[in-house]
Amino acid sequence: MYGLQASKQLSQNFLLNLHVTDKIVRVCGDISNKTVIEIGPGPGCLTRSILQANPKRLIVVEKDERFMPALQNLQQSVDDGKMHIVQGDILKVDQFKLVDHFLEKDEKVLKNSDELANVVFIGNLPFGIATPLLINWLKDCANGTGAFAFGKKIPMVLMFQKEVGLRMSAKNSTKEFGRLSVSSQSVCDVEHMFVVNAKSFVPAPKVDASVMRLIPKTTPLIDNSLVQFEDLEQFCRIIFNGKRKQLNTNLSSYFSPKQCAYIAAGAVEGGSKNMDSVNAVLSQRSQDLTVEEITSMARRFVRLRESDPAIKDLLKRA
Image 1 (cartoon, helix red, strand yellow):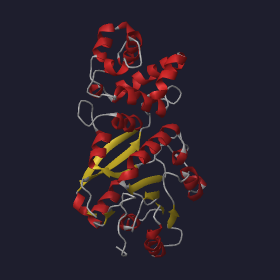
Image 2: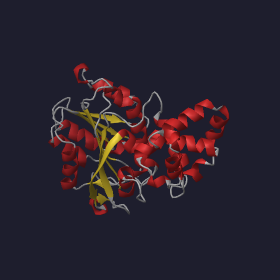
Image 3: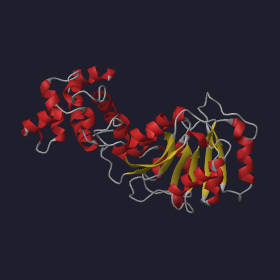
Image 4: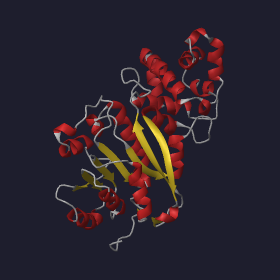
């Protein structure tokens, strides 16, 4: 398209199948009153499908300057003010300023509101940046920062490698369940929408892709007053260091038996008073624990870490 070749360095694979791009946009629902932010539009195939759905406005963020002429042609084909082009790396763009600049005052939902925000993220994400970008968004969502300062419930319809999508939505006791599952599901309701065959891309990648929909939870499983998103990430690195190992094995690399029991008691009704249940939790494989159990234990993990400088110092390598 436009005589351009995909850049391997930028993990580019063009999605040129309009049937697929239209289907992705339909996952977003009615966007006629929404500001849609598309990440990595490339030559603009998904962009066309978004414009056909008539959003209130469309902001595209593209790093590769080679695509500017194609995107400018699309911009000129719609009403003034409908489409805006931001050339930059989404991992470096100040997303608070981005949203603040384009949204009118009456479109800005308070970050603690339970309403869906007037913003939608959508994108065929370059595989090389997809997971780091997702983690940044989950962190911002949990903290009410970045774009999520204007409404914590910003829907995200994003494409990932199929394997990554399956990990995001995985249930416990499956081989895909792990850190990314907990990080995603503690903050958002995650839904695997459909698979996109690798042949739909140019050039075709070696793996299929998954379209995922993430809707931030009204009440996240982590409470910023007790557990920050970064705390949960650290705890998950510890317990999923060997996800098929018993929880006790992973915890004991950093904690005494008594401390391990204290953390595990977070997943038990009645806490430390029910030692049989605590021992049962410790004997489980980490991948068999539920997201709710893990986030509950993370609270005790944080209390223990903050109460003991020696543990805090030890955990710097976790």
